[in-house]
Length: 188
Image 1 (tube, rainbow, N blue to C red):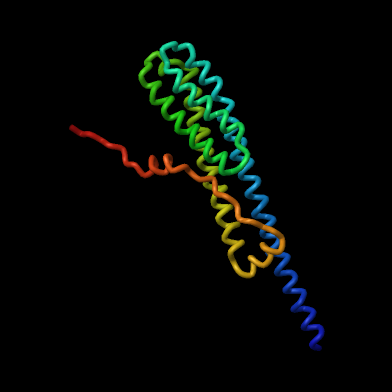
Image 2: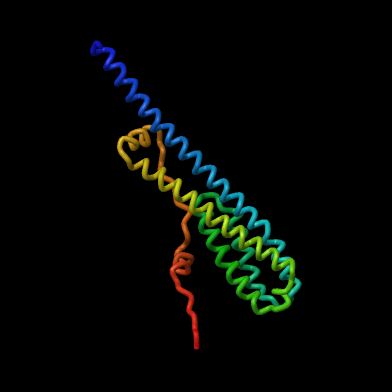
């Protein structure tokens, strides 16, 4: 083989390698967008359940209006959120408001016996689990994407074609501290 042909083969291999790196970024970016879309669908589904939940509880006139107001405000914040960071904050705020909402509901035996309330509570719980799973998947894809941006020679393609790091869909500090807390059990 002559040197020109070998050089051409090496050049084609290098170009092919860089094309594969570029396509890897495109693929990961599409997975990030798709998984974020999945989270958005679940969040919207949860936000759409809130009015039905509030209507169910409004029948109990002694129920604390401040608790309902926190849920409504958190829902609105979530509906208005645009960035991943804003969505994560709104998600955390709504989760916290719903925890307080359901904790307070424990004080109302007639509300706890309401079949509509129980169904809504169950559905919200299932959606919360789906959101957590979707968030884990999204964060795993973002981790892979961000690691690829920092890896050599991938970082050359990332800089050349403006592939920038993505934000994680993180728990807020309040949620992180709740995850790490062990429940207190009293056997006395």
